[in-house]
Image (cartoon, rainbow, N blue to C red; front, side, top):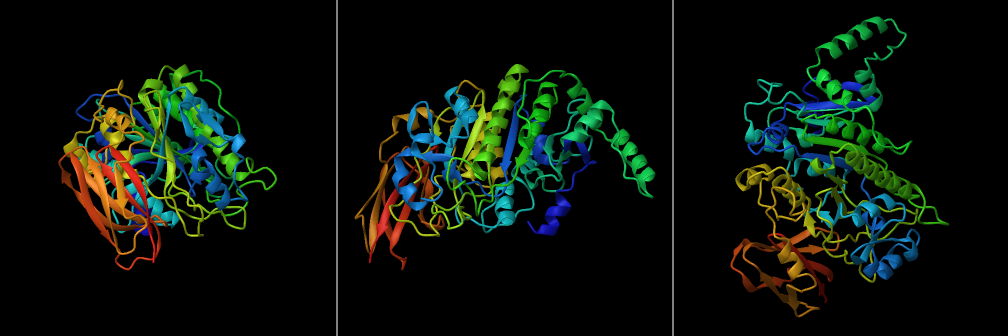
Length: 529
């Protein structure tokens, strides 16, 4: 999406509430087909999705730390590595742990309310903040420009006439709400935007308490005050937001000095107040840690540790509040960042733009496991080396839409534009479950993809096992770029083979990735001279 189109199309359909709640601006996604579909889908549901954006490119290797790759990781980033004895352990897994500042999320995992998905990315990663964010929001290929968001396309499939006739008695509330100064392109429909923005929390509390913000003492101050009053009076969604907020008079405690926690506190209040809004988006910045990522004399502390602590404490307080408000079973949340960081640290005590990184899915019905293996860390690493992608981020979107919002397969492919791998992100006890975790569990630790010879020079034969359905074999280099797609088709269950030819590739490590429905596995291959 071009920058000028981004600005034009992401302007909220209605009036932006400047600082409606605690100084955060609200954007009401009222004119996007995606939000409309989520709020009025044929299957009746009161489910909510909360998206937490970590702006700047989060260092996933400093957040979810692999015990089983620790020595190689310590060799690659000796100036920022977290001491092994300080990494937080997780119940049921011995191969990975969390940054020591994330005790809140450790507690959620051990309470079976958190899933960690390893190495999430996409083929041909882009390392520009703006473009990479655009790819995540629109769910496009890296070489493809889309003018609609993944959520907006879904709503358009279900409600092609939206926004005509909205709000109405069936859906009187905003379809989606983002706390921030502009509406995310994820909520952009093919023709109109479907969201509402709340610019900061202070204005939210001003709205619900009937307080008019003070205009500047300038020549146009009185006129500005009048415009603000008229805007509040004529805003279609202002009254319903106030009504929902008024139903909640007490919440559990949140950490102070934490902007993410402030935003999530508002979200919890609106959810518990009965707002029918289906999607909320919040964000926290500062993750572009090129330098001074850690304190040199105590690497478990520093800038990145402070950011991770705010994320962990904010989400934990949000989950505790939802439970206090008897709303936790309605909510699933997910975190994401536009990209991860490189394996090797730099000389400035930081990390540079990278490719795949882990993300969290949290909630009462979140599948409680670590999905995927620890990222492979070579014995020696170069400055451009990235961890290989295990899961496409669009698989996460598709799985949440299908398992949490009950989107049928035919609609799902139109929304996501392709048929993406189904991942088990929601527990079987929740409605709308279609994946089969037993297959994953039965094959845990089993090598279902191999190659021979390895190392190889001219070619190698890749052997792989499928369980029927769609199969995909891709080869990536150490920078995370897709080199070759060898298989992309429906296949019968059984063992198959395909040849990977050296077409003038540079010697080094390559990764063969097998995806078969909800199963994936990566094989490390070595090309030599």
